[in-house]
Length: 221
Image (cartoon, rainbow, N blue to C red; front, side):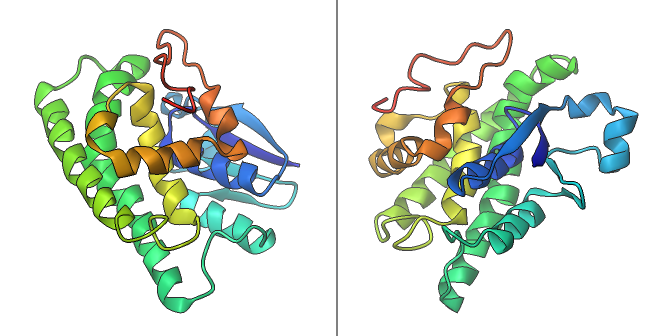
């Protein structure tokens, strides 16, 4: 049995949850308020970050390492293309969303508007929120560019790139920070993603004090 220490609105936790569900891997989800720095949790992952995947034989942290481990151990359905160039493109986009998108958008919007309140770290910095609102338009335009040329973000098949992007986007959708009316191709892509069985547990997430918007779990928006 796998045990996943996660936080519901951590995009990196969500990415791992999507992989586990897509591959029909049973897992026990353990919610971890990682900012509380529990000694037991820090012994599992000294960096103090989620997600952490634990089995009887191994403890893994970092979402990239966890997802590649799961894909290697449970190869079907494959989330990385066998073609070398497409595989490299998938990894490039995973890094894009895990790093650039997260720093420029998710931290500035989700981090300021919701996580600061949850963690008791004060009020949102308006300059950061403005920076995130500006950056998300750039990133959604880039996704539109990709989806105008491909069926999925990295090519003709669903891949880890799509789950990395959807993990970030779904967190922002929870706080209604995605302008779906201006990005039709991204909206169509996200509708396909969130209609997958793997997405069901994410759509059921409820954060106390922060109810999800009415459209969040609606497969037709």
